[in-house]
Length: 358
Image (cartoon, rainbow, N blue to C red; front, side, top):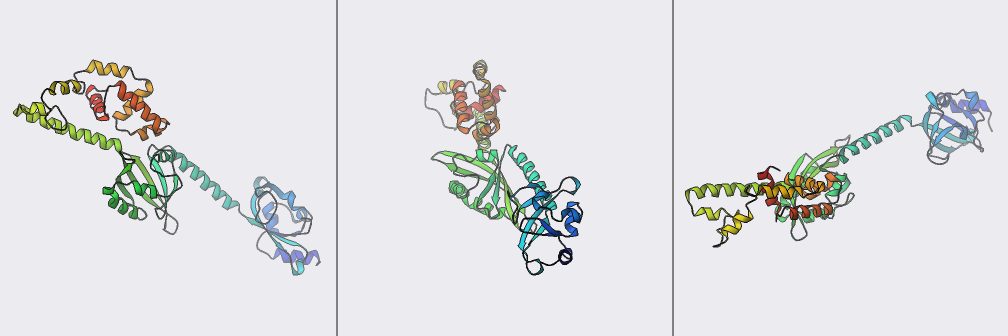
């Protein structure tokens, strides 16, 4: 084995923190770069076991690729070990390079903290948040509200978008396909109908924006998805109300139209049905205020909260996400509200609530 002076000269010439270990793991010689990294003099390192330098060991054992924290206080540093067998003048020894990764670990910690803050933000959103792959073919992540929207659609938080494509209404497929193709390049907004089962129809509003990497390539597509089914239902109710008002105005000039306005669909009722129709809709026209208020008083606190949200246009899925309940539970509450309020449809409930100012 060559003398310590030759080895010291060889090791000191290297620009990185390095030491030579004997078979027992003792440092035969180290360079000044390692001394500065550890904050200890060269004499204190010679003959010292490498195990005694370790303050924290993450990889489980001292081996090639292990990440260690060496020392404490101002001179604490995270390093990654690289072992290589010695040859030539260092035959019989092992090189160990101490790669300083302190800055890399600091940056990783900042990124993790930023990711945690970002997740806290998206988990607090009422609307669903989805993170799609750059080619807009898969869902890579979803917020709590986003996962709540998946029920009945076949979508999963880490799965393909194919189930969604299969449920898009045939009349909306061309428009939706065009929006998907553009999502990877620019911000997009599209409202689309989804067909669930044989009769259930949902409206989703999808807003997206591409997320680029340092090279300007689309790494992901961020989407905010909102169930706006109730908005379209309310819009339909308002359209019918306007049509109803127009028929009322027409009835003033043509008394024969008085019978026709009793039905929102504009059709003339059969003889003898006018009294029944007007009685059935009297509360919607403000003629049964006491009865309506009495029915409201029979609702529990949770049922009243569900009714208020329904009247303000929220869907069952949105209410479930807001209240931390399952959509099926909300459907149970919704059925109780409809039964206690003696209404046959959401449209009637909304009209009554608006007219009675509840």
